[in-house]
Length: 280
Image (tube, rainbow, N blue to C red; front, top):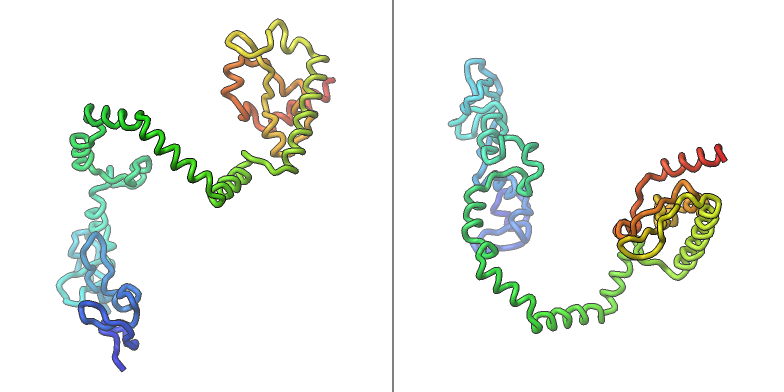
């Protein structure tokens, strides 16, 4: 029986191109090979042995000022902790971080690492900074050939049933699209809300006042502060959504930009409705 050349003591099953035999099809899967290949920033870590008797006169060779607790197998280096975890060693390894603190680099996409040389190089050599290249790219994108190609690709995608099913599933999960049953419920819910909204305007005509209703720059629309769509999602009583406390006149442009978003929270709406019911 041939044993693994990496020293784990198991039976060798695979031979690599370098001629070595291993118990696994990849050397990294072998426990002994993995232990020997543990490395940080491209260099192999030295193997440390724990000192049996800690001598108070022996200090860490890294210069942290702590008493040495470990020694390398070769006996060349003393350290306060194994596997390069000494605070001085750590500081050396994080010199590339902004202010030597990861917290300060939270907003950075590179987790706080300084890459000044790289960024300066990109500023000089990035083709998007060259006007000629930028214009060339614009011409390609705006050309008819490119648009036709893109439309063909999109059409092919939509033709496949798999892609359409995938998109419809995502839409259903997000609440953009509804099933036939849900759509029927939604329509009836909207009808009820509009019915109660109409009633509340009849009782309180001062809400709209002299403001002209319609679509356009100088026109106003009736806005539901807590949107009807959210009311349907959260299964809120349509009477509450269509009540006077949830209605306000809003310029047409603002109302169109608002879409299904809410100006107030659900708790605030409930509080307003409760006070309205108690007063009237």
